[in-house]
Image (tube, rainbow, N blue to C red; front, side, top):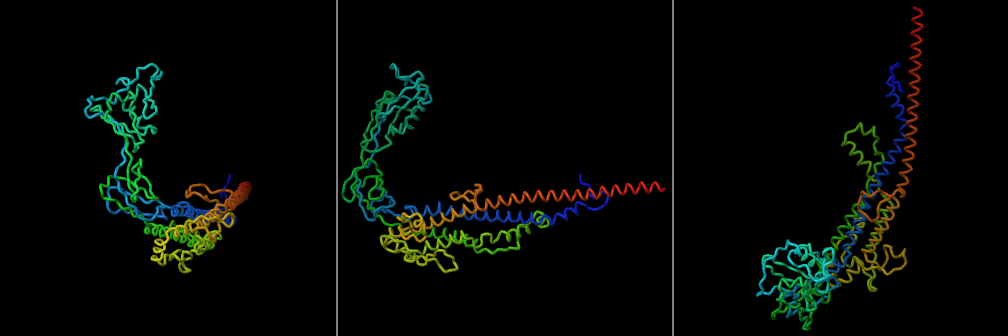
Length: 504
């Protein structure tokens, strides 16, 4: 038990607290070191998240052929007979399209002169009389087959008619749509595929009740392209990288398809890349050049109690500033990214650099940011040789040496691939240093404990635990000493009172 100045009248708690204040300075410094390290690690994670997003999402999407090798198809003349979509790799040029036949699907319908009656699709097949009567056609569980286009669809006698039709339509093997008008009892069966090879088989007894006598086979599309007639089973097909869709007969009015480079789309992709790249550099350079206020250390719990919330926020803003200033990993990342941009790319034995496309790294104070200095020059390069522009950004390296392959100055590696390698190298370093995740932008994923900072934090935790134990022991010792003093004073007073009473 602690006796707090009951006899002496001293504020022992305050005295012990004051005595412990000086003793806690080493512990406070350890806690401040830990807090600073945690703040620094959080800032590394913020950068890491942006790197992963830029590399795995933005840079990957910019490198897709559909974004950088963009083609467009325009139709003149008869614009209703066909539609055209230029796919990546489409050949530039012009083609004429004359449609004489539109592909159709085979079908079987209830004949127009056939008499049918309403049917309730909510009733079971058994109740409606659709269950086969032949021996062995229905198994012990009530299952039987409806055969269509050579495939068996298993239904049950207790299935409703609607359920049975749903099973036919859902079976991807038969590739047919069955429609029943319950009010009239009429049915239509249409093949999902067009063309003469796609047939509808409605010979099963299930369909006989609906008198499907109105039938027609599938028909192939017949199209003359640049004067050469071709037949296609589907109304949508690809010619020279252009996806053509037949909509109607030309009826003497020919469609002309013009295929060319979509310069605006490529230009917009490059602009978006530069914007995202510069935004990333701004963030990294901001941390590298952030001022460090070394006198602003993390606040202790006692210091926070003596301050207002806004004062604490302002203090911690200063304390967190500059924690990544001149960081070696981030500095190397910025330098390597700049090297990747200014180094020529070898394309078909030709040295190509971004300056030839009107792109520069800007003035030195921009710290490596990219600038489209001459948009007209870039546009002209895209229009003149879009494949070369594509190669400059996306060309894969043929280098087999693992160490040379990922160098930012690898001559036959496209810019996007160089930057991807630069980012990955930084992500690997950050993972080893701070324990961040190299592949995810999820900040809730725990840090790896076997990183450099993870080991430092574990060491600090052990030292803090030891120091806390020492503080507890020291505080207990102080209280014991004061308790002993109080006890001695109490005994002395008792003895004095006894002696004084005896003299009386």
